[in-house]
Image 1: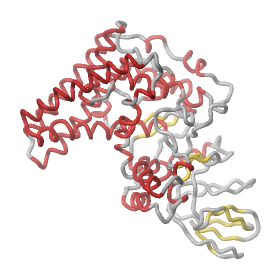
Image 2 (image 1 turned 60 degrees about the vertical axis):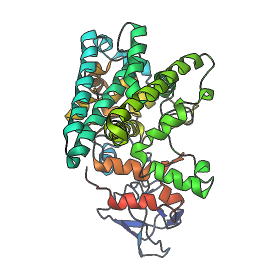
Image 3 (image 1 turned 135 degrees about the vertical axis):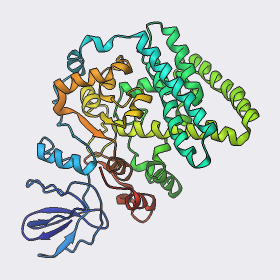
Image 4 (image 1 turned 90 degrees about the horizontal axis):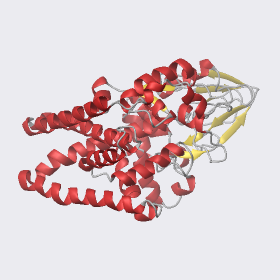
Length: 442
């Protein structure tokens, strides 16, 4: 993006990523980025695709770094349309009015979407069990060059187990709450995920969605964290950059096995879940190794487990992460805005949606977690009819992933996010690598 300077105020970012102001402007915009200007402050908005040299002279052509700053004109339909194209979204919702409450949204949903249907619930179990069994069969029979396809299928199928346990945790699987706890615990065992610790932390995610510090899912990196030490900075860059599709493994380890992270009244149930997981590892893993060897353990368990974590990480970050979706402090946070306006509906290939029980029809799930997974599509249709202009919607694509993995890094109150390559350009090789190699098509 090149800009010719003449007589009005224009904010550009140079190699130091600091604002540089100059006079009047005419714009020449390349296809590398989209430039949005508002005459009261004339901020460059968009995705950082190129860094350039900023000469402070009149009538010189310069290159500016576009940054993902939410403008005061966010209610402009044309602006949102351009931003959606830039970020890989189908639609970016207009801001939800402050006076709308979450109850207002819930009250527009038909009562039938809250109804538990035992036949549909157990059908989802049947789908997951049979698809997982088919995956194991495929792994056992596939030649080595087809194993990645078998692992992809099996990892996706076992993600369906997680969604069943997820419904149990939200008390939307069965009217029998003891049965829900048993099914949820069993569904999580192949993933060596402790059910009760996850349930407690996940409830907090729903209560504090997109709230800084309090949300237990993805949230931006704090700048003070980023600046702690060179080693930690590099680890964070890799974690929020190239390894981000598997960062749920770190989340699994950090959040679910430390008893100190739970309230005293939760510890007993946490210990029961941990005992179940350790029992599965102590019995199941040796049996797999005894029957198939250590390579069999890798082939039949580890690789599908890594496939599951790919979807776990990807689904979670796509649900709530985008340059235009803010994380807010508790005193600024609004439940309706966070759950309706700050959650993303993303369409995936149909076979993924079936195996994962529509977990990515995610906006109604955040409007009310009491909606069973098999009713999410009906609930989403109702929300589209009543609140359509406020929804963030996408079809999973490379540009969407590239935006999240190369832009959505460090918290900034004004811009929502600052990329690692802006804060530490000389150390941001993991991010520049992603920008270079990841496809940009939507």
